[in-house]
Length: 224
Image 1 (spheres, helix red, strand yellow):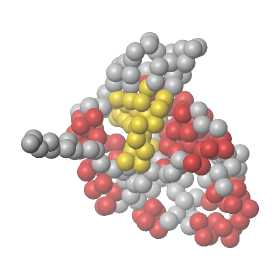
Image 2: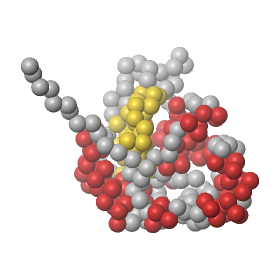
Image 3: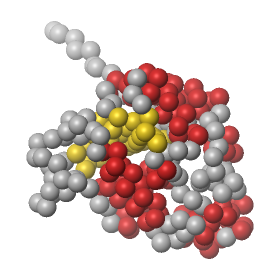
């Protein structure tokens, strides 16, 4: 990523799309273009009202329908345009897409075992590895950050698996620790906060929130 001046602080909000019928059925969606269902639209509208309070500077979304619809809920509240970037798509899961995990376990028990153990070199359904997804996700985030001011907030609307490996990659976690991060629930978010740049000027991040679905309310202070 490009260097920034010392003292500047940006945030990235990684927001997972709302619920779909395939989520409800436990199917591996991957890059299959499944729309939000009624509950997913409700979740997006509700979460958008909360996220708008963070004062986002820019919104970028995967090009799949479920993320675009989620992003548009925030755009309608904030008035911001939604940039589209296919690099923010979910993992291409090849032959696994559309199947439940029980069915995949029958089809490809060894491959699914490696995937569930967090192996970053295993290609889901013969298509993409977690390393592939993390690299393109990072490129998409980097491009979007170019339009965000030094103290601004970027909202990245993406998918559970892509966000999880993207976070791990941006945080610089060793591959063996990528599985330590949980996936995001539908319409929940995680927030990265910019740290002071490294000695070579490149960006560094810290995890401020993970898999959050609400924002804190002020605590009433009673005197006496």
